[in-house]
Amino acid sequence: MLRLPFAASSFVVLLAIAAPLLSACSGASSTPPLSSSSLQSSPDFARAPRAKKNCKSRLYVSSYKLDYVAIYCTKGTNQAPIGKITDGIDGPEGAAVDAKGNLYVTNTSNNTVTEYAPGGTKPSFTYSADLNYPAGVAVDGQQNVYVTNLTPGSLVVFAQGSNTPSEDLTGLMYPIDVALDASGDAYVTVYTAGYGNGNVIRYKAGSTKAKNLGIVTDAPGGITLDKSGDIVTADQRLPGVLVFPPGKTSPSETFATNALDPDPVALDRSELQAYVGDAVGNAVYVYDYSSGKLVDTITDGVDGPNGLALYPPAPL
Image 1 (cartoon, helix red, strand yellow):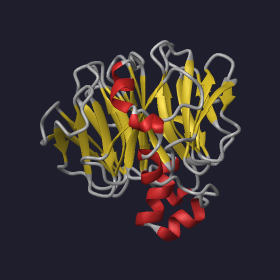
Image 2 (tube, rainbow, N blue to C red):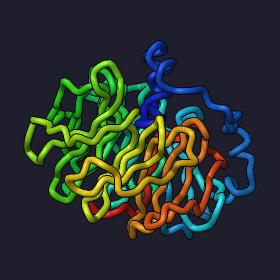
Image 3 (cartoon, helix red, strand yellow):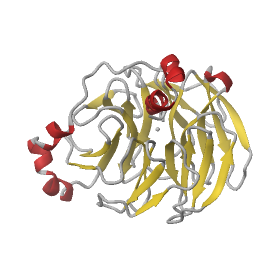
């Protein structure tokens, strides 16, 4: 969703922009960071050009501490990266892929969102107007780009390829992540006053007024929705990732309880698997979405995973 996730990402970002607050909210990583040089020298990374051509389904991971977006094939277990994106990346947190395959990355350290064409590693467009510590990012069916600003808290909306916001919804309390449904409604995870806990709010399509959905978490994190309309959101202070059926304020399912700081969460296109970034444990965990069973752990090239995106993306 770094995004206090943005989710766990946000906790890292807080450390960077609000040390006193972060010290109260998150812990330090217990895993030594992987170096960029060790990744580049690995045999798997050296074979990246060939591997990328044969990879039809990809995972993008924003590693805040390593300052790049790593690219993986979703096929396999404990995968090594097949490539990475560094151009335009500066403190990467949120990540999203649209239906055309464009990748969007929030760069918290330089207040931009960089867009990359399918297969590209250099920005095809950069959004920057009204952005201040951007965290979460999502894209609707018309390719409008939604971005959460950590502080001052707001939700900024851009038309595709325009650096002039079409909406700038202010007054939010430290918004972490944003997700969209098929109707164009925007769901945002936010802190409550005093950072005591978190809520999920919703903006109906075309509305500038948010509704509190009554969903409470200890520390808001990443968010997505499945095809049934269930809200899938991470609680960074645990117990993990929670699934809320439409209109419900109690979760029907909980998974990712093994994570130290679950933050970004994403579903694959078929919604058979859920991917969760652990910003403190420095891993991306893959779960069977129906059972919550852990099926894969990705650690190579991961340090501070505050954003996840999958291609092809799950449908809105």
